[in-house]
Structure formats: structure tokens, C-alpha cells
Image (cartoon, rainbow, N blue to C red; front, top):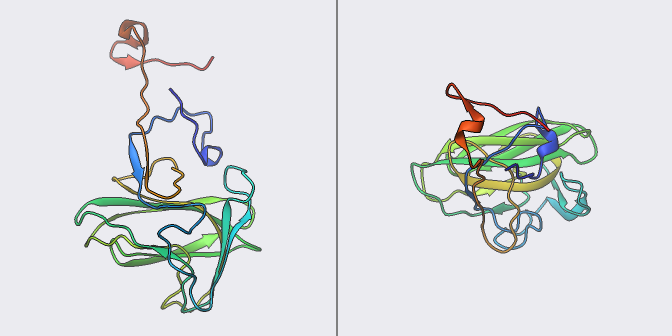
Length: 200
């Protein structure tokens, strides 16, 4: 079973077989940024549905413009202390190449890096939580000397040691069932302990 997901075209090998385990995205409303999300920071600008999302669907990517020292929007998430969590989001520059900047409270870390206007990038961080608030601030420049102007799509926080494919949410967290590769006869696909597959 190959369950196509958002962002598959960005993979190194888009023809690869993807089999993900079951995961829950704890970020609610991750294309509308209303349910569970904060109001926009004082000096920041937020525009929902500014452009097409990473999957090409019109009006799904939000634009977040945040000046130095400010934040745009954040969401509080209840997490388990001491557990591993994968934070991810798709980013690209809104009008030019630039920077992305996050603040994740799971390990109380701020992180940032470069993004381009030309292509979406899925940014990810896997952290061990030091508390029970997994707040995710997705265009955060608090304590920073730079500003950001980014497009963002499908932010995700999932419990696990690695990120899986993006899960769209609306008013509550959403769970994707695990995928399963299955064949009725093991002898037909196993040779000497090796699994054999070929594209058709």
C-alpha cells in the first residue's frame, strides 16, 4: 500500500514506497490558524490563504510577516514530559529568499535557517520535551535581531522519534492510520530472507 501524502513531490525519490506508522498531528487547524491559535503579534502581519499550499491546493498557505523582537502566531499543545516529538512545517519565502524562525517550548529552543522563494522546504526538529507545554510559534523573532516574511503550510507536532508525512487538521488533532504492506503468500515475495519488489 502506498498512501500518497502532502509533500511527496519534495522527496528525494518521489517514486519511493511510503509506509508510515500511525501518528497524530497535535496542531489543530493547520491550514486556517484559527482554532487553538493565538492572535497575531502587535507588529506582525498574518494573511490566511495567501497562496497555494505545498500540494498545489489554492488558498492554503498562510503568510506570516514578523519584525525583529515580535511573534506572529503560536499554538499551545499539551505534551508528555520526557517524550520525543517531531516538529515540522513547510516553508518558503513570501516574496524573496529569506529566513524561517521558530520557538518550540517542548525543549524551550529557538531555531532558524534559510529558505528560498523558489521551492517549498519541509523544516523539521525532533526534540525531547522538558515539560508539558509543547507551544509551537511558527514565525517567531522574539529575542532576535532579524525579521521574517514566510509562507507556511501544514505545521505538525507528532509524538515520535522522526517526522512522518503531513496530516491536515481542522478543529481538533487528527490521526492518520498506519499503512501496511501485505501479500497473501509470503513465499512469493521472500527469497532467502530478502524482500523482493519491482515497479510495474
